[in-house]
Image 1 (spheres, rainbow, N blue to C red):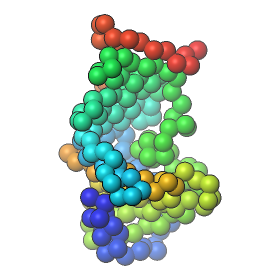
Image 2 (cartoon, helix red, strand yellow; image 1 turned 120 degrees about the horizontal axis):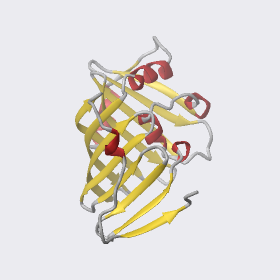
Image 3 (tube, one colour; image 1 turned 60 degrees about the vertical axis):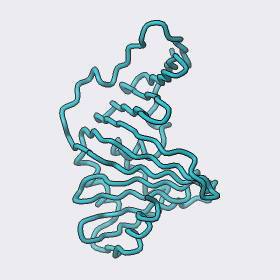
Length: 205
C-alpha cells in the first residue's frame, strides 16, 4: 500500500497554477459528512508491520466523529463535540472524557476541514496526476511530531492519508466504499454504554 502511494507521488507532476492550500481547502470544504471503510496499515521504523486493521468512519461537521476499529481488536471512539467515548468491548469498559478538537491528531483536524493555520506550520506542495490530486505537507519546524503528511484524492474523493512521524513510524489510511455528504443522524455521535461494563470518567467538568 505504501509503495503504491510512493509510485503515485513519483509519477505525478507538480502543479503551479493555484496555491496548494487553496486547492486542498476547496476539496475538503466540499465535505459536510462522510462515511467510509478504511484499511489502516501501521509500519514501524524498521519496516516491520505493527498493525493492519479495518475501520468504519463517520464524520459530521463541525463536531461529529465516529471511528470504529472492527478488526483485529474491536474499539470505538465517538464524540459529539463535547464528550469523547472510548469503548473497548474486550476490556468491558468505556472511558468518557472532555473533547477538544484542537488537541486531536492532525489527520482528524483535516477531516474536520481545519486548514486555517496549516501554512504557518507546513510547506505544502500540490501534485496533480490525470485523475488524482495529492498534497504533501512537510513541517517547517524540526521539532514537529511529523516528518511528512500526504493526502490523496481521486476524482475529488478522499483516497489516502499517509503519515510519517519523526520516529520513522508510518501510518496509511486507505479509504474504500466512501460516501460523501450522506445524511447522518445526531444520535450516531452519542454513545450509551451497554449494561454491565465499567465506566471510567476522565476530566469531566
